[in-house]
Image (tube, rainbow, N blue to C red; front, side, top):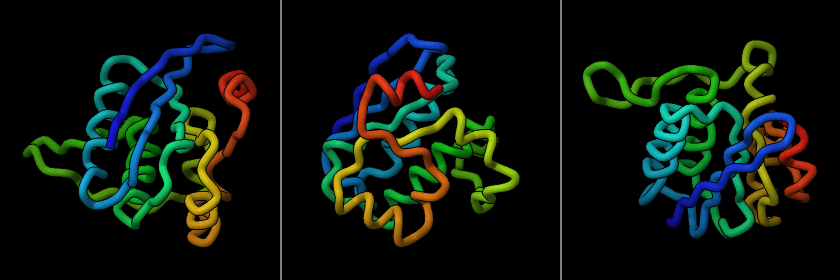
Amino acid sequence: MQITFLKHEANVSVTVMQLSGKLDASNYTEVIDSAQQAYTDGARNILIDLSKVPYISSAGLMSLHTVVLIFSGQSAISKDGRRPTFRPINMARDGEVRKHVKLFNPQPEVLQVLDVIGLKQFFEVHVNLDTAVKSF
């Protein structure tokens, strides 16, 4: 898994987190740690670029869920250094964070997984980078 970050300026500053490779149990913590670092460094709007992710496992889905929670202000690291247990995403309660975490161009297989488990309904998904950045 390769993770790179780009900054775009539109209405607000948007951090694009580009992921490349399969997103699974072997690397999902890298996604979480990278998102936590971006948030710690001041990013408040993140567009997760999934255009180069051909496969996502349940661990990968959990990492996307955790990014949402991080960008709602929760730390991915507890005071004792272990990962905290997060609550499930709730559309009514967590709808506000949807303004700050969006997905860009998931491959059809990944989009299908997001749809089957219901996360496609939670995330705003874009296929045009300019439109995605301006949507924040």
